[in-house]
View 1: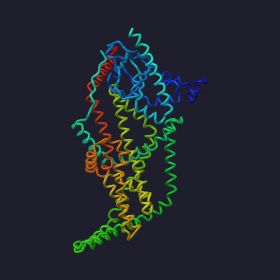
View 2 (view 1 turned 90 degrees about the vertical axis):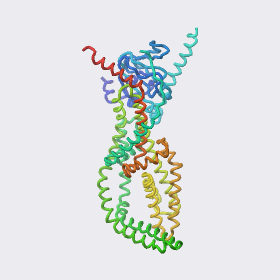
View 3 (view 1 turned 90 degrees about the horizontal axis):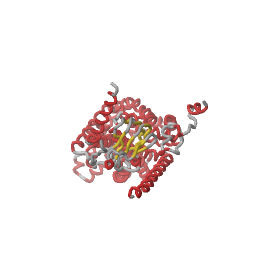
View 4 (view 1 turned 180 degrees about the vertical axis):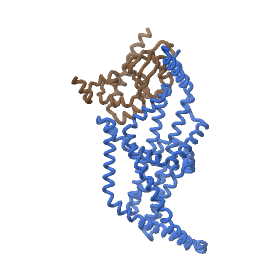
Length: 160
Length: 376
């Protein structure tokens, strides 16, 4: 009961209860900071089989999967997904950093709900809320570093 | 269904697209002139919004919610403006009471300078003296000034009275832009299909960026102009240099005509404050020319020039077109409108010519129709 009162009067509710709280990119943000980020996000719904973005398309936004499942596909792999994404995962993150074309296609495997962070909004966030944006950028750097490490580990193994 | 992409060729608008952009700009200016009572407060609201939004962001950063931050910033601006008006009311009321005399005094000063200059020319060139140019000029000016106040001042007073309520809309619009502007983008985004969503966000961002850079640049340019002119006028020893600098910088918002009017105002003041010293008026003209050159070659590229990446010839031509289509408002609004229409035209062209996006949209529609028929 006390916790309900605390929430309804805008008390310091745990950030994990926020819909963005379980996304790695936003871990470390306070509930107030999550609310600031959330105000910038656009909610979109995709049906199973619908393409979110294509390989080669100029990326403008990062996507956070709130519910549903999505597949990352590349022509070199045919219909075999490079990765499957679930609730809390994010994709299209390179669009926040540069204007290079998307490196893969992302398609919904089931009806899905995503939140979209547009690059222009992220840039404005860096100007207006530098600390908040730098935390997100730091998490993004960690994520990309981990992915690079995984690739380096996998490469000799696949060479064998 | 394998992952597929159509190779992207960078879209460049062709002659037809450019014709469309110019035609759309003219149409918008034409419509704007018809609803000027709404366009002026909207532009005013936009300017106030751009000036105040950094303060709102600071409050957001401090943890204040959107609505409260907007209300606090608006209240602060209202109090600051109200305080300024309150402090300047005694002086303003005195000056407003004497403005017909002041206007007449400055006009007389200007006319004296003009007739003195013509008399000097008559002394040098006998054909001017034979033609009695200075006498004719004095007669015509006297005729014009006698009927000027009678003819035009009531019309000016009525126009000002008619515009006052409309101008009050400006701060009102600015407040709602501050409070709900961020929702508007989401609202527009929601009306767009998934396939076109990213491009639409980009388009909205570019439109916002173009308008922001233009209007903020215009304000910065006004500040630079005011300071340079005020400094120059102060060095020349003229009265109220800051007020004169600000007035001429604001008049310069109207391309060509505004600059000439500003120069005339400064010359009138110089001729009146220093009668019998035409060198001062010539000095003011020289100062004006120097500041204009600084404006065109230094300040403009640093401020407004950043927003409008268009050919100088097109810029000049469009200013004339804007003036022809919508008069003075057309002159003032043609460049920001052209900038925004260019962004819209290029982005819409990009979307319309992208076969892959259209195919994806058709595919999504088929999926939605199938989902709607499920279980029937």
